[in-house]
Image (spheres, rainbow, N blue to C red):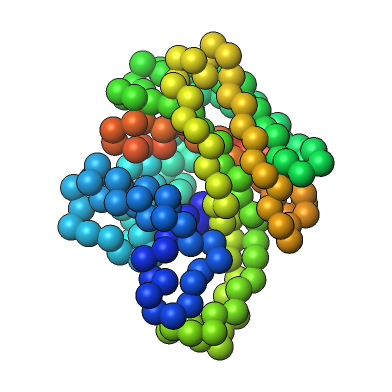
Length: 188
């Protein structure tokens, strides 16, 4: 499960260091794609459906049982001041089910981090964050990814060692935002 921190709670007085306008916009696209009534935090998605936190384990198990459409071979390295990653993508099943605008993109993810809000409802608490999305790469169209693979480069994040990082690649439908496949690799 990936954690996409949003920025729309910043007005409470504490700015989440992992919050991002891009993540807020992504959540708004989910709301539109799925015809939801509005943003809810935390808002969990499995495939292309919202999931209540109490039903997350069941949704993850169901997703794990689904046949794979694609196989991804992923590598990630920290080289000097950048994380470089690549993915080789092949068809593993009935990839014809990939919807319009399907593409592949990389995510730089921090395995865990601790924050200590000094304002807002979590003031004085110590929050342990897991699988925090730090950055997303550009989307490569599915057919191009199948033919040439996908390359991504991210600036090395300050305060995070290679052992704290991983790179995930998502195969996602464009309009529905349904995740078709995901694979990750530790940053070495």
